[in-house]
Amino acid sequence: MRRVLIAGLVLAAAGAAVVAVAQTPGTPPEATPTPPRTIPAVPTTPTPAPATPAASQPPLAKFEPLAAFPPLTQTAVRGVLLGADWMTRMNQPQGRFLFGYNPALRTSMPGDHDLKQARAALALAQAAKFGGDEKQAAMAGQAILTLLTATRVDPADPNCRVPVHSSLVCNRVGFAATVALAVYELPAADAKLVAEAEKLCAFLRKQCKADGSVDYTDSPDDDPGKTDPEGVNEYPGLALHAIAAGDRVKPEAWKAEAVKKGVEFYRAYFRTKPHPMLAATVTPACAELYLKAKTPEAAACAFEMNDWLCGVQIAANDPRTPQWAGGFRAVADGRAAETPPGPETGLYVQSLAYACQLTRLTPDLQRFVKYKTAAADAVQFLTGLQYLETNTRHFDHAFRATMLVGGFHISPTDGNLRIDATATAVTGLVRFLGSGAER
Figure 1 (cartoon, one colour):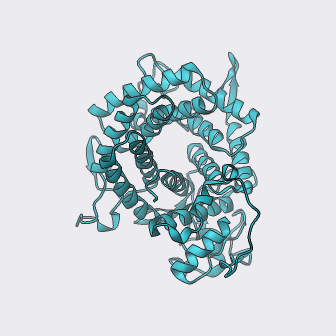
Figure 2 (cartoon, rainbow, N blue to C red):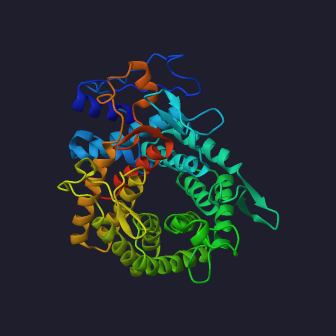
Figure 3 (cartoon, rainbow, N blue to C red):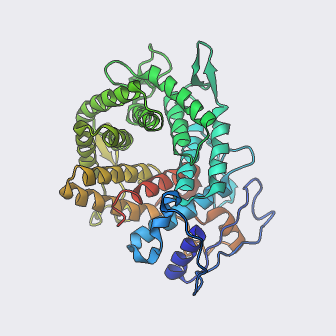
């Protein structure tokens, strides 16, 4: 069904078939070209499929027929499916993803990073669950297993798994949290893998302080303001999100308490030092907390953060950077910075989508309209960064089918591909399609 949806949508929009080649990018595609496989168009009289119980159908099933949904929703569905297909083509035999690719030079890019690899594993797990794709689920599981080799069991605590690299190489808290989230999002994750995610959460538990803050440094003597001042906007929120997801999968009193205190702490911190990434990373934990415990303070925190986030969104009538419309201005030292919106946009879409979901439960119609509009504008911007058949015709057919179609480039001014750009885009679009804002 997911192939039919891709074909029907793209044929209706561009009158052309989308190609997708399942090839691992180990060697340059021009050296060993693989003939592209054309996805068939929607048949005029489709053959009835065997009835499948609604409970066992993937979320993608609710978008059938896709033509009945708004154009932006159709674009978002296409974005997820083609983005996930691109990530499967970038997955390599050892389980890691090709980090980055320069289409102009047809060469891979340096700068591989474990946290970005973990984001890709998480996004592929989410896409596999969304589309019910068993191959993608297996590939995401293999990627997670590969990432787990960068952790070890704590010699002093067999129930705790610790990242082996220093945070100077890859932040331990952010990495452990993202890998744990990937496991919790994996469709039908086996008990052994869930147990490993629980051990990662045990490590995160040790980083949680009594006041609710999360220590994202490697030593109590480290000063995060000096070692990684921007980390406060990203890693604590990821840790709280992972703990909250773990509480959903395997409830424990300490998890709920850690998330509750963490939300309280970072809500107060946000009031003094607001930042779009802090809003984006803490909001999912707020949503998880509210969904489980109906804690009104959690919803209030999410609304406060996303109200502010809407304020830094770039409007369509902004004459300074019209091509950035729908994206979000970066913040540096408490001030807006004139830098192009990039891969972080997917996390902002995820945040607004969570906030939309909460407004439907509280309920808050006025905020729902506000967040839905902001999310829609952000999705419009985000999907404009995706390479499609229609905007890659100046490349030869086999090359664009293998290396380009489905990938999200880094920004409106940077056409290079990087695995975390596509990963965060897929993460945001998947959450948008389940928020209620897609209707």
